[in-house]
Image 1 (cartoon, one colour):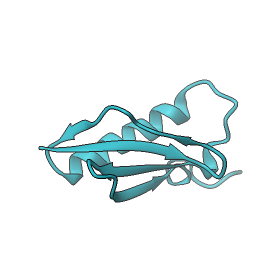
Image 2 (cartoon, rainbow, N blue to C red):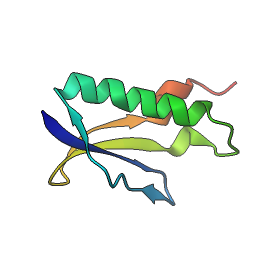
Image 3 (cartoon, rainbow, N blue to C red):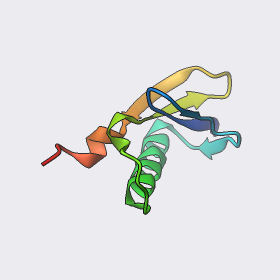
Length: 77
């Protein structure tokens, strides 16, 4: 098991995950990251998520990978 953190940021804000999540491997971390991004996008909000990204970091703060919210949103109409 590995502990990871899911931080969100855009050009102005950083939302730091304070509670680690235990994952078996990076594939599970990617699935969890996708669920977080999709849940935030689906929630009622006036936020424009296109400039946001979810940063998955290990227990020492090293970034493992980034999921841009734009990848889940697709192209604007």
